[in-house]
Image 1 (cartoon, rainbow, N blue to C red):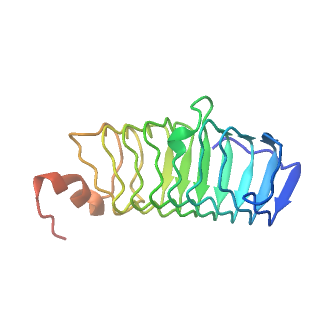
Image 2: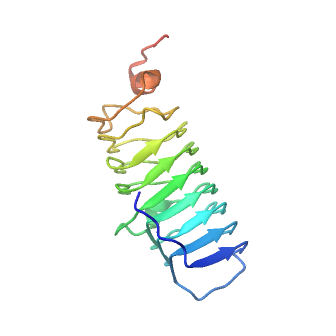
Length: 189
């Protein structure tokens, strides 16, 4: 994770669905307990979001560069609409259920201690991503680059080795059934 500089501006308890701001760019900002319905066409650089609600957020043409989400709710967010240039996001203790990272390059991004049920990682590149202690129940991996990814501390994923790149990826022995599901092989302890 890139080091996020000390925030220079604080936004707290703001509902951006009712607060109409003409501001389009946020840099070195911290947002605490805010609600965001739409980030379309907005720019966020080196920002921290704590305990914010982004459920069903729109990200069309947004720029997200080195942003940290801590204890946030991001249900059903489609990050695929965000611009690819310098895209870097970090999640710690977040709920990312049903979010989509379809075709995103997540090279410098990180997922830690997060619930990621039913998320879509189709054709995403997680090869240089950091992942630890995440729950990927029913997450979709298809055409996904997981090369070199360490999933040894994460659980509940089903990854088809024939449909994804997994060269040099790390898995815990307990996750073996999630890699062999396609073959209907039963693994017992």
